[in-house]
Image (cartoon, rainbow over all chains, first blue to last red; front, side):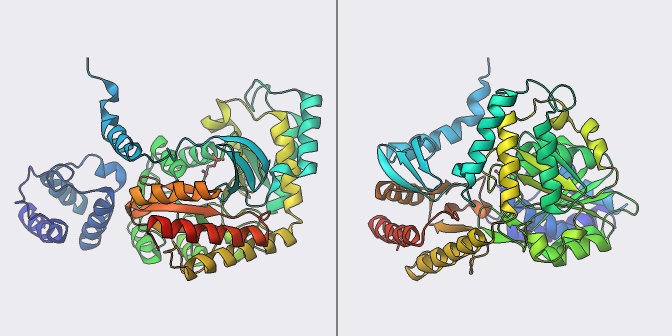
Length: 79
Length: 399
Ligand SMILES: Cc1ncc(COP(=O)(O)O)c(C=O)c1O
């Protein structure tokens, strides 16, 4: 799956968690812009993991602050 | 200069706001005198204790106290050294033997606290390239153990068997796996479906660590915990426990049947680089652990207390953390921190101490009044407690 297709899928998965309807770009940050708390992060990460059949460990999550970084990480994990 | 404390400003503000409502600081209580395992003097008032972890009421057991006094006389007040240097006395070996006998396991390693036991064992056995799969509601000491080590850390939704299996399934072939679970989760007092979870963990070749801090002494036919109760203790690779709850003193431990377990004493830094427990503490712990092997009557009374309190509070309209009483912890869910603190204070005025718990210790941002029962609470005390809850709950407008 290429980056654009991955990004599209992730964008769809974010929707139910994007309570304020923030416009998503690669620079959108999860903590700052989307105001994700730790519970939301857990549910959101589980949704991504299930969709792509991957593990995003807490260690990897610590490196991911923005939407763009998440897309890159998923692309890389999918190989 | 950047003030390194500025990161705490939101918390400082939250505390200031709470205290400005005139409520007593729920995190500043002092017990002036302790009368028994269930009664203390607080603010000059005799107060029933319903927020300790003294589940089996061992803190004033005459045999336990006598053992401690004797050890003070015979071995002095402290060891001034690490377990691997000058800090292992006869008493440390004796308490480790008592734990082996209590759990029916080959090896026991005693740490200075339960917090350090989790910190040390988890960070040491799960290394780079290994995976730790753990429940999201795990105790802080488990999380800190994960953070201190180099393994990949993968949490799953609380007590969700399917979520756990999905994660196990995705771990790369050949990686070492440690599954970390608790018997009783101390915030809501609910227990884990260990039987199902451990079977799945084993299917994926994982080693299993279970923290039984809140079950020792009264859950399971021999008080060995939830894993024993569910018939899967022989499948558990490492049991973590503490002396600070049912045992009634301080200290932590890990018991295991792993044939190479003893090497831990040399490689586990929170074991090596700290002073060992004082002789009086290990003597009280050993005596208490051995007495807990024969405590069937106390165990039965504690369960009775738990059932009566759970039923009584529920009947009076309180919202509880579990549908049924699953442990000695009954958690009362508060609508918010402000009313939780008000209720806590109203109970204290009634002469009852409970734990006020709030995020980040609690799951899902809840404010809880945690009641932990003691085998030494009398049936009358439990009725008194229910009456206090009813009056305080009405006063604060929670029921
Ligand atoms: C589940 C759990 N594990 C470990 C600990 C730590 O025990 P200790 O008080 O001995 O440090 C506690 C107690 O706070 C606990 O609740």
